[in-house]
Length: 361
Picture 1 (cartoon, rainbow, N blue to C red):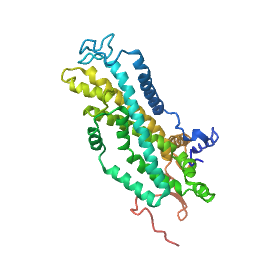
Picture 2 (picture 1 turned 180 degrees about the vertical axis):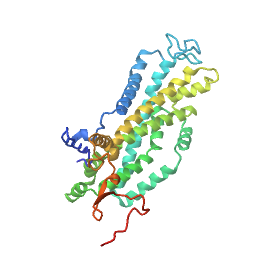
Picture 3 (picture 1 turned 30 degrees about the horizontal axis):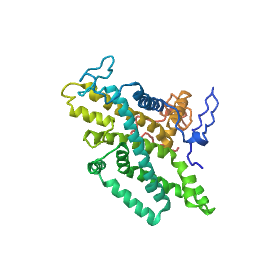
């Protein structure tokens, strides 16, 4: 059962166009964002980068091969140049895309699973369970994320992609947990949830069948946001030398570029591509997230249809209340004077009060 209302407002009737009935979306489409420019642009960016991460390592040379000339600028054969050790930047960029996506998606999944436990479960069960889980969430929320990641990563001598993803996910679940907890508390008092409890349904089934389907758009939004934070967090850890050992990511590329003096040597092709890929992937996820927000926030969802209705009403010569507007101002219309038998303007500018005393004869 889904409690999200996706009914568009009725388009008002005009003299030459009948009223258009509201359009409703049901089923799975009710939880899917409507196709828009920002959604399409975000999907294209994400799809292109994911395709590059899958196909790129198959068509480029070994990213750890140092048999090339060092510090070559972009040229045929090395389209993004080489590093100070002779590594091909394009090959490292493709391999780094795969590593960064693994870390981002894995950390996002860990963060969402923990947010479900500490947010949805706590918000629905209430009582001492809610108090304990909320206490843990509050502690994790006030601890700065990046310093905590630095401290944890510095104590680990071996840091694989999965270990870094676990660290990023554990330190990033508190924010989504707070949002999901508030939504779960709101859904807990809905009529269909109360009816399920009265019918004797068990708590796990109520959470999975009645509560979670209404949280899917919000879960998707928080998942995408967690991926962006995880990729940025991994880039920050790798730039500080605390990233995954023996793996190539966009963050490790930035760390090697900084250690090799790419900025002072003018080797822009070494540090610009990984930074640009991080920015483009984050932009694509943010654009998709904005489209999902139109489902979560009813005002954003209905704003385009409402604006279109207002524009059509103005073209038809109506105001916001549906009344026909007149180009002649009401204050300038003549009002019949019963005493004098003549017409006088509604506002007498000679009298400061706008009125005259009437003498009964």
